[in-house]
Image (cartoon, rainbow, N blue to C red; front, side):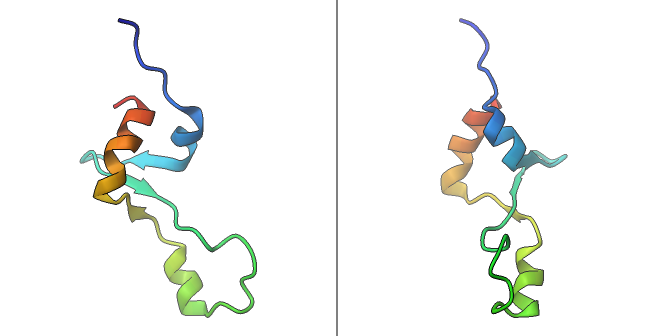
Length: 64
């Protein structure tokens, strides 16, 4: 069977750490920032781990 191709959209959105965990950017930080508190926007700037329920699907898209 041929190799699985990496989903290029997913490759740009997710990152695999050295230990194999999946990281993603958080939503709600692209626009309409004036009304959001500094604490909130700062917290949204960090990368977070992909939820366990989504991890399987993301791994498949990345060809892992």
